[in-house]
Image 1 (tube, helix red, strand yellow):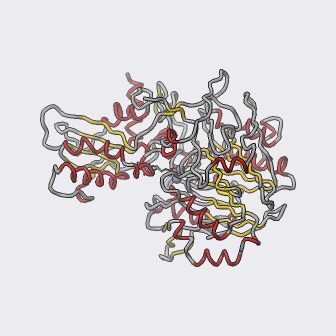
Image 2 (tube, helix red, strand yellow; image 1 turned 180 degrees about the vertical axis):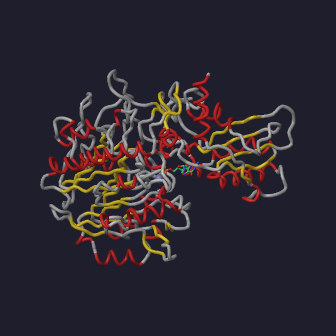
Image 3 (cartoon, protein in one colour; image 1 turned 90 degrees about the horizontal axis):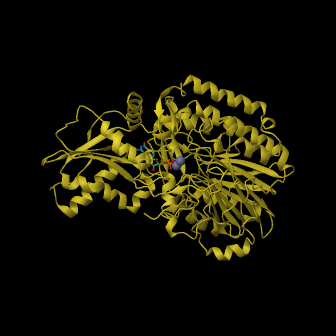
Length: 592
Ligand SMILES: Nc1nc2c(ncn2[C@@H]2O[C@H](COP(=O)(O)O)[C@@H](O)[C@H]2O)c(=O)[nH]1
Ligand SMILES: [Zn+2]
Ligand SMILES: [Zn+2]
């Protein structure tokens, strides 16, 4: 397999990049190439952006690159504002997905109830929701009543294309449809919108309208009438929507619509959902920033000459650690970074960890297992571990050892590498946070044996089955040249991000990570000797629609059965979750 180095990707923009490079001349910043920091270029209007934090508020305990917690982040933004911004302006923005992926958010019922208190300690100027706030009613209700209507964020929580169904079954906006305000120092007139991507799996308490459709509604026309171009300095469009979207191009459609009303305005995008660091040039007056995932990154963007015809944009991806935070906020030592409020939040996080027993040890992981920096065939690949040693441990009342069995999972159900060392209660939520039911259908082997291949070749499924970042990485081979592959003794592994401004966006030079493509689904196969009329085909309830679709498409072609598959054919299989089976496997290693 050709080794595909993961470095990130260029962006599909509406107009040939070459044109923009002339406008953004010298955009490829002259960042340092040795082991010290690439600095931030503070401008008139500055932004710090987070997205897809997924409950990672307590730092990455095993990765120093991301060793700051939410309290340190609060200290950083305070010090950064005090010491670097001066008479300019700074806006803090978040673009959703705030649980599902860490014990601090997921070890409570409902998940997020304690982590939301911590998250909301940050003084965001603009915030919104992601699809993970809409999978379950509990999460949606919690998000609405704890954050949307929280006085602290009055007017600041914007969701232009999402509505909430209240307890009284009334349909109301999920926050503000837009926000018009002036920045505190330079009094820039800001018009802000927020769009969630076209997420169609929302629970009954929320309604999502595709962004382009939403912009046809009267409310938007009224906003344009109230705030015509001459009254607006900058339009901010922030939301849980990828900045680079090679499949749906949703953000490009939004941009084209806004440009018909605001042809000469600066439009600044902040995106999320695909879990990558990214920066895109949309046109001479418009760029987009995306700031990774899991509190590994604070995205920085500045705009200078805001009111001119040639605004200048600068971006930086800040590693979420105290060295970076101290350096960029201009304090000499990490100890000087701490603020009282930040310190209080950090100690609250420690209390929650204790209270939720997150540090309790289940077993010991003898070696690290990776999602995509080892190939699927490697014993160090986590999907290889699951399909070989873990999924076959699944037992339930339906298990019939005389029957062949397939167990299929979507690779997006695994959220993080499994590192060598203690497997704690937190590890289960980090690696496999979704509490999915196991369902099954009893089908002929002739159909069962082709389902995985079908699901792995269906491009349409890319957007909702695989790990979020893999959707973009899979596009890698079609992109422009990648960045130099860095392997320098003493450097730590981390991100080297290729974006529309080149390869020097990361605030530190890191050794590059290898990347190997990840399919949409993987499966364990247990074929019993002898011919068995039918097999048990077991799968996550989350992917049931895709399994039914695959069976009917395959049967259309192979004519194995004379009926169409539907939900009625799917039965509960039962048994332990993948996270629990993984714990059982790790415990068994201790005994051997
Ligand atoms: N097996 C499950 N996979 C799930 C579930 N909810 C989400 N997912 C996976 O996550 C991505 C979306 O994650 P995001 O952070 O990019 O929004 C999705 O495409 C699935 O692959 C679940 O309940 N079970
Ligand atoms: Zn996410
Ligand atoms: Zn998302």
